[in-house]
Length: 172
Image (cartoon, rainbow, N blue to C red; front, side):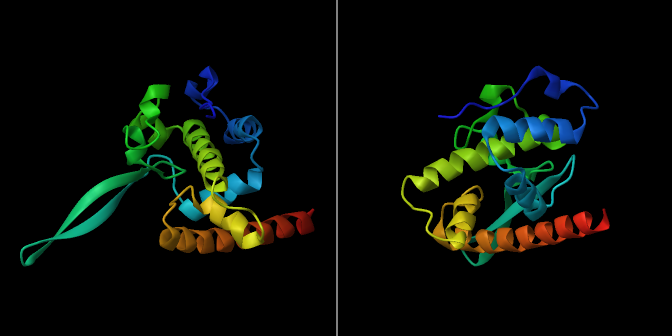
């Protein structure tokens, strides 16, 4: 099992995003482009609390309810604040920290990318570029149908990231 990375300086106000981002990518040994691709796909922001609505039938009525929330810049699902998920509170991570602290949000995202990728590799092999996107998509869902949808979104975000990087290099 990998350990959750939460150094004390993450709690300091005003820690530069790029500093903790670089620190997190080194700790989890994840290419920064992977995390940037996930962040672009999730399109969260500090303070975000986006409801995930579900529906169910009760007799003749369809009931809509909030099943969970996606929190903060990395849009970490609130289920991971419970024992049904990662149980981030065991590491001192609260909903407020996931929502408002970018360093903690990014570390939680990287932790989940690394953990879910390792789980995915237990039953799959990387034989194509599409497999790479499916492995990273396991961050969002291991269910094949939803994994494929998220993998396609990741692929699109990655293409945009590559385009932006080429434009930035061309401007120099």
